[in-house]
Image (tube, rainbow, N blue to C red; front, side, top):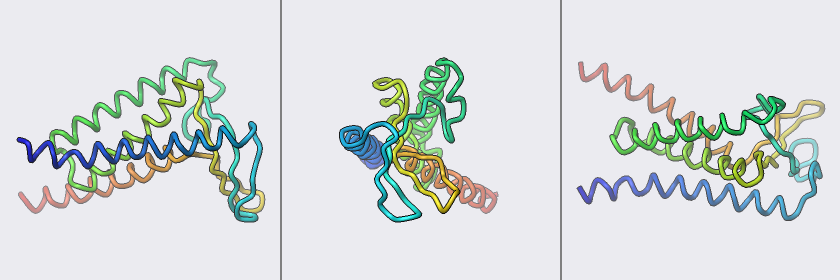
Length: 165
């Protein structure tokens, strides 16, 4: 039983690292930038900026009137609980557990923002000429990469399940 608990420690550690990296980067941006200020890092491609998102990805529901804050807090809690339970029960392979830990860490990074600031702090802005990808943050990156890893793990497990039959 001790070996089993120890083997899962790396996943919880990854989630904590995601939260720390996210919050440290957001604090640095909040201390350095005024709202909507931009600093060009790579001309015509990448800027650091400070913007707020009261909604979800791509500012979905950003103008919904305030209820969305509680909706996204609840959604993050439910999804994180499900993923944490799946890690503990070994429902995923290694890639899935790593992905789940990344999603949990990213979700909690954004939850902390919603609780402290009332919105999510975004600051990474990629663009090309007149095309702009919506600004995002380190937590969002962990969530996206983690979600891709969960999908890959899902395909791998399907393949493994078919071989077992």
